[in-house]
Image (cartoon, rainbow, N blue to C red; front, side, top):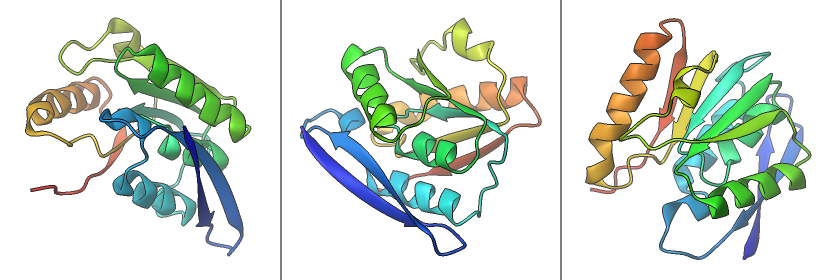
Amino acid sequence: MDLRKFTFVNRLGIPDEIKISTVCSAEYAFYPWKSSELLAQAIYSRHIDLSDRRILELGAGTGLCGIAALNNNAKNVIFTDIADPRIERNLRKNCSMNNVSSFEFLPCDWNEIPNAVLEKSFDMILASDCLFESRVVVPFVETLSLLLYKNPSVEAFIAYEDRG
């Protein structure tokens, strides 16, 4: 397990460091990909206003974007990712290292969205690097579409890298 440190500068020029525990693994959820770093920077630069917002993060992985949201006045974050205790454990560790506590973790398979996710109230959806393989594109888009349909006032911010 490695520790990566990300430094983001807010619009006032004040730096903030987020520590993320990573694992060199073939599994995507244990590494903060470039798009999550860019979405976190957009949060810090206030291109995305999170003041008192309730956030749902799809495919949270290491939790970088949700932690950035909590560091920038989000009311709370619901982290979601596949049901894997290692992902949840690593995400909780990252939240603890960064002194954030207004969060919960819910397992969410985009092929079968659990009621626990559908019943949550939130104001914004964040997702980064969720389109990592062609096989996940349709389930991800269907999940996002359903969540936006059920919550028409919700905004979604999606960051991804075209990996061809």
